[in-house]
Image (cartoon, rainbow, N blue to C red):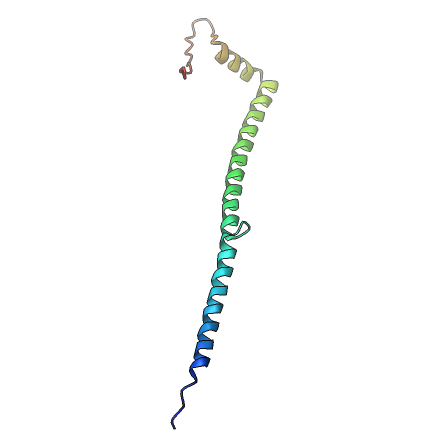
Length: 106
């Protein structure tokens, strides 16, 4: 059996519908990707959050270390003596004291 080809206007309508749907999907995708609350912005914010969390962990570790030093200075007289001797460059009789100096940054 011979089939009659569809009228040309219905194929144009299908083509226009397909193009319109493609355009709508492209515009929707662009909006979802690039607007200020889109995926790209969210990804950038997440990277910033990870950076701040890492910095926060470093600061927390430094705080713990300093709290430990404070505890030792308050409760361990030998540690306190050692630190004072290091800072002031003092030594016992017959002891050689080596003091490291920070280089000038000027």
